[in-house]
Amino acid sequence: MATEFTMAEAIIARRTEDRVKAGAICRSKVDFAFANDITAPPAIKEFGRIGAGRIFDPARAAIVADHFTPNKDIASANQVKTGRGFAKKMGMRFWETGRCGVEHAMLPEQGLVLPGDLVVGADSHTCTGGALGALATGMGSTDLAVAWALGEVWVRIPETLRVDYVGSRSPWITGKDLVLDLIGRIGVGGARYMALEIGGDAIADLPMDDRFTFANMAIEAGGKAGIFVPDDKTLAYASARAARPFEPVYPDAGARYAKRMEIDVGALDPVVALPHLPDKVKKAGEVGDMRIDQVFIGSCTNGRLRDMALAAAVLKGRKAHPDVRLIVIPASYEVYHECMRRGYIQTFLDAEAVVATPSCGPCLGGHLGILAAGERCLSTSNRNFVGRMGSTGSEVVLASPIAAAAGAVLGRIADPRELLGDDPAIFEGI
Figure (cartoon, rainbow, N blue to C red):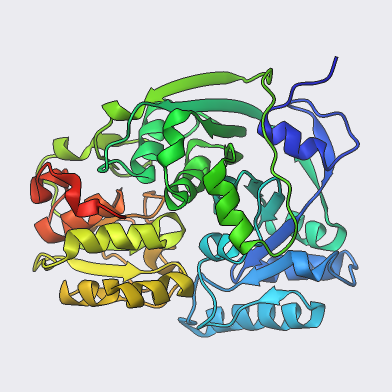
């Protein structure tokens, strides 16, 4: 009798000769392997230490300089220089500032992460690629060096938590609300070393950008990966961009899951995650009078075109509260250019926002918006740990682009319907 696989198991099974069973460790081929400006230098050092002379396939490897770029200081300039030189020597992919974007947004745009792939990256939010039906997962720089050298990795096959979304989603509910709600239900360790497999009838109308947001935060529930079952939207997105052939993978009807959940999207309200963990989830309208000093709209979680469109719809004809610094950072130049064409950048400037070049920005406490002690930021990013965006005496609250933009206008955290009313017509066509 044939083995019935979950998506994660099925993807690995195509790339290994070892037995595929949840909990087993196997040796598996990879389809793409990458690092960023922070994680590349130690990977490069290890690559040399093990005596590797070449990349397994330069077209399937990349360094994405996105965290501290444009270089904020001498140390970051040296990091990028190291990565640039190595990439040029090995013939692998590298993009200069002005062409580069946030890795987890740009690599799918470039058609380098595709349905059915096994993707590894030296960054925990590599799981973003799961929106395309790939098994995409983060690893340390040492393991990444070996993947670059051999095109293979050791993988502990994860158990799978299957989540089915049903019902009709309100326009107020974004992918960020869905994933924050899930993390609030299961906790930051609720999917530890598991694959989140996402499906259900309600996913059909969820835009790709929202799926990337959801998959991005699988790691915040402890997940090894967050994988959406491919559908017509997935295949249309991938087919229009693919840099190489791909073959989607689907779960078997008889797949065995460690756990299953069903969630009615029609019962959800806009939510936020309060300091200092992503599972401190509360309805945005029930937070109370929580004032904010800064709003950040961007990052690998919510810096895509739909995120910019939603924020621009809220901010059109409005200005940021006098006590709020509003920072908007598109996640890639593809997004930036389209925002220019559609007039979103002008809307942000009219709202008195700072619009910065594509980068991770303040998300990791890097630059372009560091918080001082006692300050609070309402952010569309993925983590609100102590000191994540600056001082250990600061606070970060996570929210969707809709709630973040509304908060920027109000100067406090609130259900966006308080500002905009109950009519969702503002988001028609987005």
